[in-house]
Length: 240
Image 1: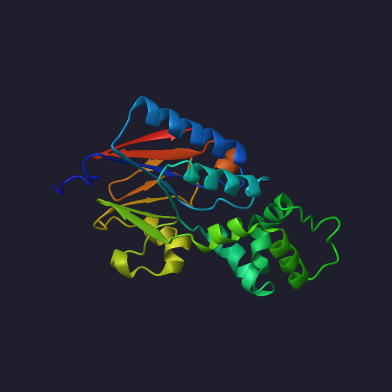
Image 2: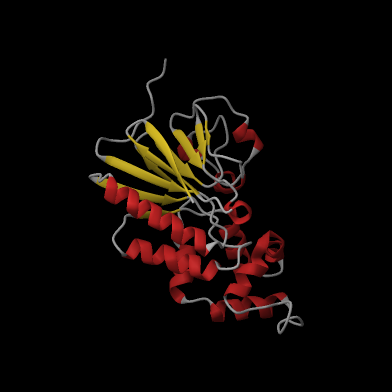
């Protein structure tokens, strides 16, 4: 029987699922984490945000402000890239190739920065919209998006947005898989060497499997933003 996956002694990790432009839920989750930390102190705390902060919901700009403020207030935070952040950045690099971002919820993100394509910007081309977005995007938000990590490891836990490809060593994973993979990962029964903690695919309640933990509970639509709380080999959950 394999030994349980565990964190180093004295470590606690909070891993937060997909926020998708719901600043109200982001603020609620931050309050839940702070309250939990105050009630049950730990020597070392890391909050891992699993990506997909942007799109769909109405307040992407406020979400990023909340995340930056949370980290600046002294809580060690790791920010991972989701497929929606990758799509946003692709639009900034090549707006014509990146137009698929609009279908993913990018219009709501643009609106949160004051760019309403359905109204005053209706006649603009992709490059014009990109330029307007760059002009409206604060430097610290752009720097935040460009600094997002693909994965993070603490103890026996591997954190990423979507999952990993079976049969490939964790250190050799394709970046595209880390932020986009679904079925091949979800259907895998193998032990990946570390327990994979991820979001990306919405589920009705958090999934705790022998080889993975899914904390994406579809916050944008359900109002339930979920966070895994990991300490030692124990895993619990907080939810808005």
